[in-house]
Every structure is written in structure tokens, then in C-alpha cells.
Length: 215
Image (cartoon, rainbow, N blue to C red; front, top):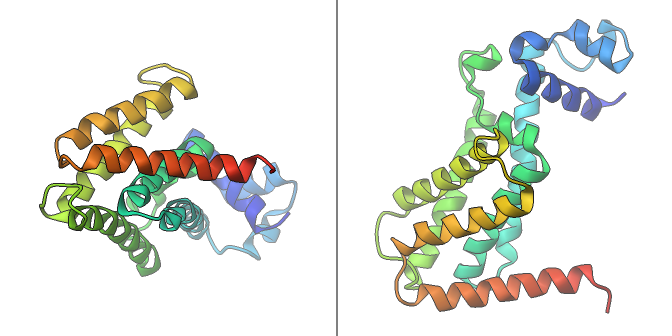
């Protein structure tokens, strides 16, 4: 048993049963160790759950920051959206942990380390929108307000799918997600946006194909 085993099982218990389902005794039993063995890693279940949330943020950030490899503002915006979607579908339990309130975890407030990570994610989205505005691809507005709209849209779509509100398989959902993104973008894009985004998607897709298929 290592720390990642503890975090993984704690996340599974929380997502399926809430805070009441997570106890050091239950974790120890599930992992085949004694409770004192867990306390060598964590003083309390609250500390443990906060670590799960931090782990979720760290992994989510690693998916998003892949967007910085994009060669244009349009490609970086597209890759950010793709990273958000891929993380949510590949790690649905950790995605759920990203949006749990501090009170639900049994603490008064999130520690500064977590609030700083959340602020950095918000800034990341703001930057993707701002550079697209500066490139003339999006209508000039407050980048933070626009990025909040896009972030909220992506989160809403993912939540609908993960909760089974609109049953479909993953391929169908991915198609629906991108179709919905296009509808949202039409309201804030300039005439230059469609061509730039088409080129961005083609380049990003070609890069993935080149990486996955040996030459």
C-alpha cells in the first residue's frame, strides 16, 4: 500500500457514498491494513480528502497545460477544451472531487494551497480567451467573464453526461459536446474565428495522429 492507493480508495468511497462513507477504519479494511498504518500517512479523514482534491487539481492541470503546446491562440483554446473533456471522461471520480465544497469535506475553508490552485486554473482560462481576443478571433469583452461562461458551459455539459441525465455513449457525448461548443462560440466569435479554429483542429488532430502512429 502506498499513498496513491489510499487516495484512490478514499476518492471512490467519497464519490459513491459521501463523507459518511469515508472513515479511517473503512479505508484500512478495504486496503487490507490496520488503522494505525493509515495514520502514519494522515492525521484525519479530512486531511486525506483534502489531499484527494489536491491530487485531482494537479492531474486536471496537467491535462489543461498540454494546451500550451498549441502553435496559435485558436489551437491553444481548442486544446484547453479538449483537455477539460478528456480529463473528465478518463477520470470521472477525480473530476467530481474538483467541485466539492469545503463544508462537504468537513472543513471550514479550503487551505490556501487549494484556493491558489483554483485561482491559477481560472487565470489559465482567462489567458486562453484573452489571447484569442487580441488575435481578433473573439469579440472584445472582459476575458474573465467570457472564460467563466466557457468554463461553466464545459462543466455543465460534462456534468449532464456523468450523471446520466441525457443517456448516450462516450462517442455520442463527445460529438454533442463539440457541437454545443460551436453553438456557444458563434455568439462571441468574429468572422475570422471559423477558419482559424478549423486550421487549429486540423493541426492538433494531425499532431495526435503523428504521435500515435509510428512512421
